[in-house]
Length: 328
Image (cartoon, rainbow, N blue to C red; front, top):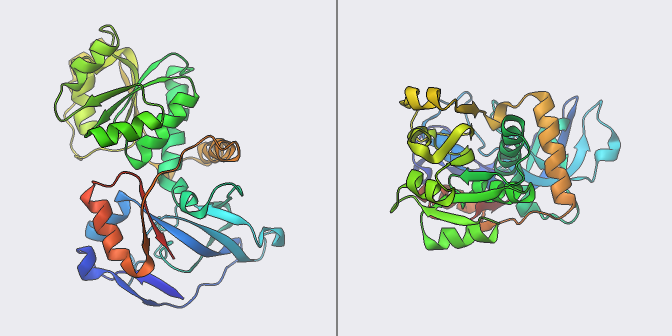
């Protein structure tokens, strides 16, 4: 099969290779997927650059979509022919979705509704599931979001674009941090009510101005290294909750006194490591939104498999609005 891989950490143009690899076959409990698309996420770029290799070669990317062409023992043969999207394709395993075929556990291949194309399917594993789990946890920690003020950091990002839509569907009012007018327009189209230009204005002061001094009820956050300070400076109301799935720094100073005296809370989660119950709940909710055609999907650029290095460089640059997808 044709695939892309790397055998050492480094820059995309230096380490990415494209060629032929042995085609995998499904083992017991697995499905064999003929992939149509592979989604490229920032975590894929970070892994290629710095995560120590666990195997002689890594076929990258955890997200993708395609059709099941065969099943291993213990998997119903009725699954053959299903359109599916996959999650955790390259999480703790060497062979991801940047290939024509992959074999993986049956539960990691989720039925893709007929009305959702394969490019959108390649955005469900990390962006889609991170977004829906963020909203589920926000509701768990802060109650019904209807009428609540929700600050979404990075509202125009791949994940933030879905979060903005899902919070809006749940009845929340989204304020979003964005870096440009173009990104603000993208987030407004997803349902954002107020743009906060974090590069040129104080986020806490702007949030307070938009909430009559209270601060947001909930912050759904992609960068705790800045949000920890913003919350302490009034971006989050007393007894408010932060739902966090990322940080640009691994060591984050926490202004403890304002967090303590305002009884603010934070819930962290890693989308690769959801509990089985949370995964089932998130997948079911995401599937229902796809069936109901409630989500806008944004594909910023599509590349051919031979262009995998350029796809990585595009994600790395961080300027693209929308998801980067490879047609495999």
